[in-house]
Image 1 (cartoon, rainbow, N blue to C red):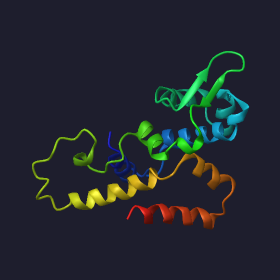
Image 2: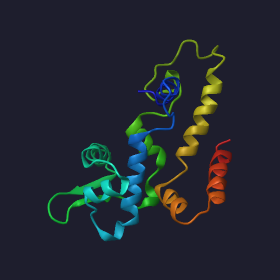
Image 3: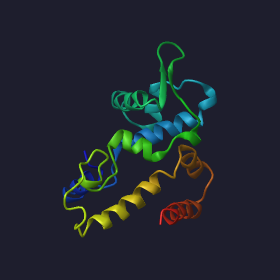
Image 4: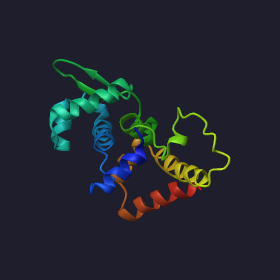
Length: 171
């Protein structure tokens, strides 16, 4: 599954190219858990209610995070889910790649791609490499803690500054 291929298909088919349901909900769910980290395990139904999604759908997404060792679950009374690390240790890029697949825009840049025999003469590969570096560096320089701070403490102007700072640092 190619992240940018999916973007292109969503755009061509009239969909919102930024509609990444799984990764968005994973980030939002982790945000909810991080906000209440000291409260212990958060029940799935509470997370689903806050995100206004079905528990069944959230359960599918949460399983991805548990399998990726980002969350730990506890069954029974007092059970639910809890982060396995501090919010500052969760990288948004890791969450996106865990749920959506690699961010690489073309097959030649996929993690498991074979070396292309046209690599040395390809006119567009350097462009895709630069683009991939920008996107990768942007998402891999934002932590869950940053997301929480953006939501709870910062104005729109500060959020915009954070985005420009992340892009600038990747140039």
